[in-house]
Length: 119
Image (cartoon, rainbow, N blue to C red; front, top):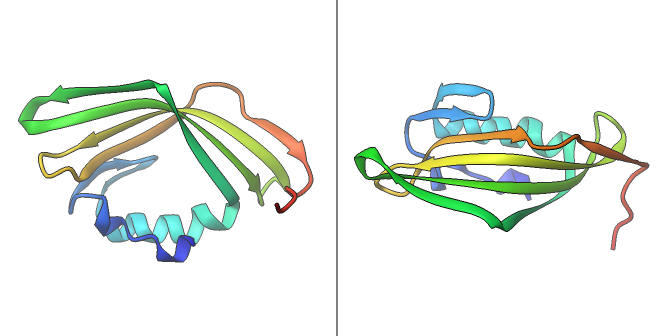
């Protein structure tokens, strides 16, 4: 459940970027995810294209992960099923905490009709 998400488990005390938010802390990320993401992106299922995963070492003991993510969900604001394919960049600090997390659409978003069927 989204209400259990706690960014303190994954993110550093100071985060350079979380999607379109900059210079924030884990509590702000937790609030954003709980109050906005989970209410609009319902029944979201995310998969990572493992062949797209690239991990590289960068300065200061940090490392970067780049990959393609596909999210399938019911988008409440559009009242439609949606598939989003995005290029994701995540930078971890030397303590393996996220300090940078961005996602940019890689391809056009596609919408389907109606609410997804529960299985």
